[in-house]
Image 1 (tube, helix red, strand yellow):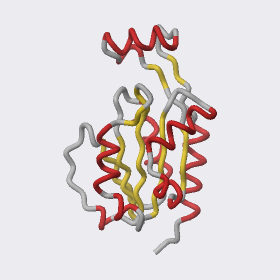
Image 2 (tube, rainbow, N blue to C red):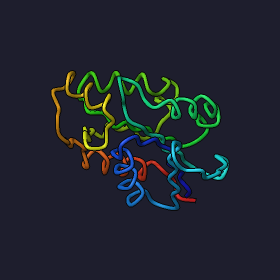
Image 3 (cartoon, helix red, strand yellow):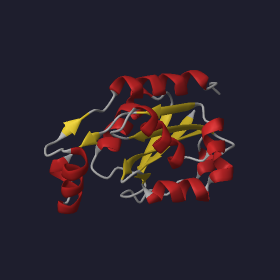
Image 4 (cartoon, rainbow, N blue to C red):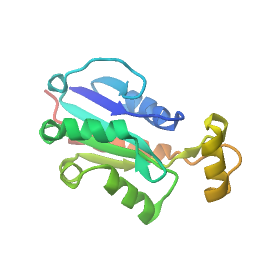
Length: 164
């Protein structure tokens, strides 16, 4: 089985989550950061696609939205996993997840996950630091990345898949 992981990582949190996924997803895995990597791929070559990103100002990255829109119909034919890294939890996190991914794709997915998040103030620009300080009273790096949620996602994704 071949799995493509497409994601965007602004400060490195989503990249950390993807690294854990790559180690725990069975079969051949290719991870592509849509913001940085210039790797060409064809969705037809993959049995499954995992899509993830992070929340900034309440929204997932634009490149993730564009990818989902561009490949929407093709994704509905794949085993899809969806995840989100966000610092919020509970109903707010669920609301952000639901805004990030279309309902039909969520309904068709084999695994969905909320992986927590981080405030990496040390990697933020001046404007981002000011917003995080004002809105969340955060002035230093904080991590709330949920490794258990990442592992549970990988387990669900692996268990639903039928080996070729």
